[in-house]
Image (cartoon, rainbow, N blue to C red):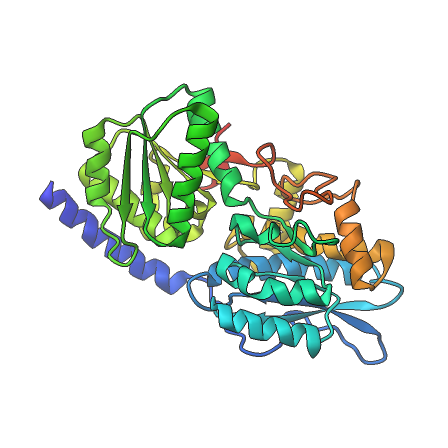
Length: 401
């Protein structure tokens, strides 16, 4: 076992070095920029804001979203814009820092006079800046951050300006438990989670839903320090408890370490995780290990329908690659909601918000419905819009259902 572990470690380091060199270059954007600037000479424009991470730990999410938003804006402008006015995307990098997120969102509202906003990638950044968005009455569509409270903070206000096109944490847990308990009839579930906010929130959702919906408790729970990233003790705990499946709550680097630990220790039980485990970073770090009994929640896969296939091909044709398909798709739908609303009601931010809430004919590329929102529900994805996915032999993410 020690010899095979050493061989794997050497292989892992070689692979990591190669892939690090091949990783997409993410542009750091400390000041406003337009990714596809509109030629404004003699032409009226209006501004759409994008406040998201282009550097820091969630930069790949930001790059994926930016590409989707760019495509939506280009389609809107190529179709003539709104009464001859072209959309201009104003992008700032929030550096995955809440204080920076507040600064740039205030700048977008007060200096750049945006009519609507897309962002961010981090739940902490969202919770930090949404008071300013709500106060300014600017509609915001969140394409990545999954913290449950984000859309709930102003649910009792006369008008809630915060919408989301990403699977919130509670819905992801519901999808996993539905698969393991309702469909497969499993009763011995282990839980592994990190000790920071993301993992702790996931643990609470799992315990609450298992108790309230199934009158069950996890067979074993194992927490790990994401700074140390030693997952082998957690795998051993799962083996000792004889679990039938593991529910994992952690981000991409932690998911990679989990798979590495499973390879080293051996574990027959499948792993079910949130959409964070579908982050291409995991594949880049551990390669073929993602093919072994690994499942995670998604709202979009390239193979889910013809619309998704065509969108993926458009991304590849435009950028030469699709670095983070689900993030790009959710970014595209987030921007398209805003731009489709503008086509219907014009450039008044309050009217744009009202229209986003009232769509009955929206057409997106993710699993989003034609009526994605109501006054009471600002989540585009419920339990019926997310599904369990996995990697196929060609290392593509596909639906597992």
